Image (cartoon, rainbow, N blue to C red):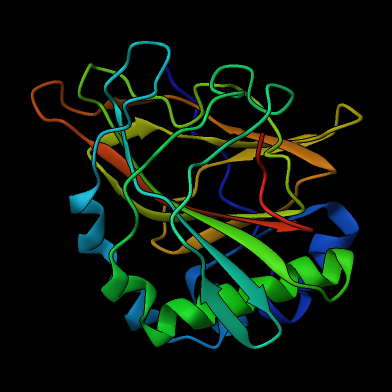
Length: 247
């Protein structure tokens, strides 16, 4: 018998930045994410069909065909949000032993999406979290809309395992779960045994992470009904001081 993961330990909007700084992570519901970013929740929810238009990830070294994604990059400097020329995604082997050390070229997000005022507000609002951790400065942001499917019977949200991303701040936003089981979120102190586990299920609830202090992963997903493919959609936003990661 499978034991369900605990419900997410939600943090109120008024306490989110303090909890993030103190604990190295905070979990917020959709209304709190919207409040933190001064965006209407209806505007965030309107993005959900965009996950139906994600190309396949051609770089999975485990031979899987379960991940679809796009990738775009931005600089947030105070109130200014600027999209930079399209560039590959790169991580070192230190942070991604499975897919690190190579340039991965993904299709960009739609220009109509990234030009939306709600998108700009989301990036600015989450930049305040990074600033709370490291101080005010320009933030180099990489945006990753992901869909993990059960096309091969199982899908792996984090095939590299428990990891850090090599940045300063990470927001993992759950967008949708359809026809799946699994996909449990796990967060651990990078230097100790303390950790927690839970399952995000509300659209646009989010896990906020101090990437230097914690490691994180999501467990594999399987279809509830083997005859029907399921999926898990997320939006991952990483914030890094000083520049984008690169070889």
